[in-house]
Length: 216
Image (cartoon, rainbow, N blue to C red; front, top):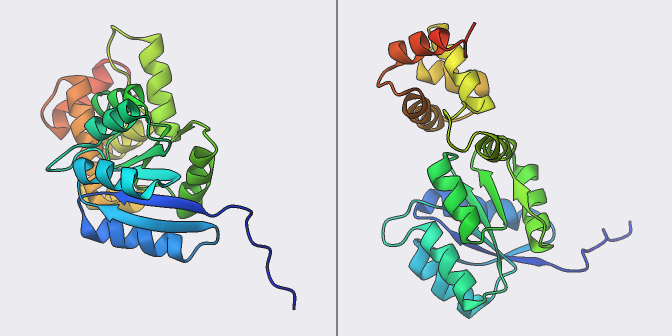
């Protein structure tokens, strides 16, 4: 049988995340895929900037909230240094306070950690080509922010899904199973929902959502 065609260019990747399990998982995913090579790993933004200069990867997968040096500061420093590597944010957080600063600092793309594996591979290839990559939830949030810069922050499509299930009395674990996301991600969405609605618990979130016709 003929050998499978090899890609013209292997995309080199640097993984920056403070969780060893996440780094190991990502390295394993890319090792099993054709056309990628993981050059190294870093546990915080400071180490990520240093390794980027040393290894010169095509794409840097950057977490945002890391002890010892966050992702936004690292992205800004990479831009200041003129580093050619494209930065693809890969994080659990999709709030305005995370999304906008990262993109303003120079990130090429923004993807959530619950993205399917093929979506991640496609995003890395696009980032390597210099194309902007945004998860649907983040893209929707940015459009809403442009349309309503000073008004109430609208809930994202995913946050609405979570809130509807909360209104049905579903627990976090059940919501996670229904939406094929982690329980931690559900808690993150709830935190964002509470902040946007100006409430502090599930019952108040549901009541406020009905009052504002967010839920019907």
